[in-house]
Amino acid sequence: MRIGGLASGIDTESIIRDLMNAERMPLDRLHQDRARLEWKRDAFRDVNKMLADFDRNLILNMKLSDTFNTKIISSTQEGAVRATGNAGANSGTYRINVSQLASSAINVGEKGVDFDTNQTLNEAGITGAITFRTYGKDSSYGEDGNNYRDHVYEIREGDKLSDVIKRINDDVNSPVRMTYDENSNKVILEATRTGIYNEGGAEIDFGSDESGFFDRLGLDINNEQGAQNARFTYNGAYEVTTQDNHYQLNGVTFQFLNVTDGEATLNVTNDIDHTVEKIKEFVEAYNEIVDKITASQREQVFRDYPPLTDEQKADMSEREIELWEERAKSGMLRGESFLSTGLSSMRMSWYGTVKNDGAFTSLTQIGIETSSDYMDGGKLVIDEKKLREVLAEDSESVQKLFSNNVEGEGRGLINRLEDAVESTIGQINQRAGRATDVSLDSYALGKRMEEINSRIENFERRLEKVEARYWRQFSAMEQAVAMMNNQSNMLMANFFPGQVQ
Image (tube, rainbow, N blue to C red; front, side, top):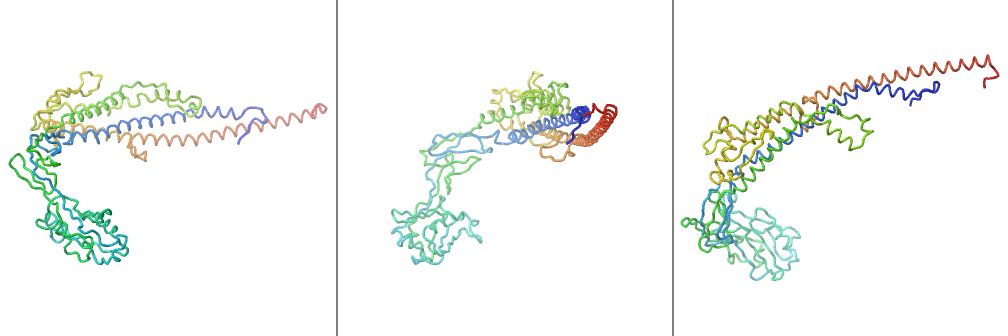
């Protein structure tokens, strides 16, 4: 701690502080220059984040077939047959007559469990391994090219009936579920899948089990029942048998809930509402980008509002600081040519002709065009009525117009836009870096900030030396004043001895 003015009575500390404030003015300007660069970098990154989100989500959605080919399927017998369609499903009418549903095999113990279920299986005299066999559609189901799979469960020490039931039910490779009904003291053994996989035999075959487990549960392999395949007729001529209560044809998956009363008619059409909403969502996001970039080039620059220093902020309220910085940051990206160039490239991606084998080659043919108001900066405007008409007429051609993923004149409008967006993102990355960039050396603004940081460090070291010199000079003055005071007192004592106290 330094204390001055003891001899002279001068407020040395205040004088040096004022002198240093004057010396620090160039340093404050350096801090303000760095703050401007940080604000500019953050403004660039805000634009980049919006472009990247647009690219990852909205542009991607417009390239997906589901955006243009989602299906609506109605059924005249919803309680018996329903259907869903993928993007490749053919539109049209389908007639389905379901004569039989698929069901699963079930076996119920006849005489009930003949031992105390609280006993361990070993105490009940059941030893060895519990074994049963299930079957698949073909030789890929089991091992060694077999169409069957053997399920083996070793009886562990302390195992009770409930433990084995849980182990069987938890086995992901076993299409079997076992249930013990305490009320009737019976075990239910059933398949977890529908259909017949072992023609002429049991679906759950435990005939070779040597542990005696199934026999003690009162289960008889000959009592299994219930397994059957679904049967239906397609369009009055094609008869189909399937092990499941669903079946896929032409991209349409039919779900059987009950037998039909004669034929059920299902109509498959494109979901135009879904496509229109996706296109509108995309256009709104695109227009928001146009708004933001256009506004950044039109914002007024307030040169009389530099970034505030810490000392200035200390004398202001939070609201005053907020209003000041709002003006200080205005026009931060104005005049950045590659932003306006990037926006121009995005606009130009809509104007070109797309040469393909579809019915549409330009955006205006499907009811979308750029705004006639030049102040809008090239926003897109949708004629929804016309868009719906062309989607109902030929949604596949609309998809090709947007997302034909080829090079050259046949490249889709969305792919062209994506090229422009990604080019702009790349330029912003070179200028302002990514949010994950740690090193300032990796982008242009960062290099300028690093240079300013170096100048700030050098200037701060210089200020320390200047302040030390001021204190030395004022200390020397204080010493001289103190010496003069001592001499004056000595003279007064010699010439006026009676007056010196």
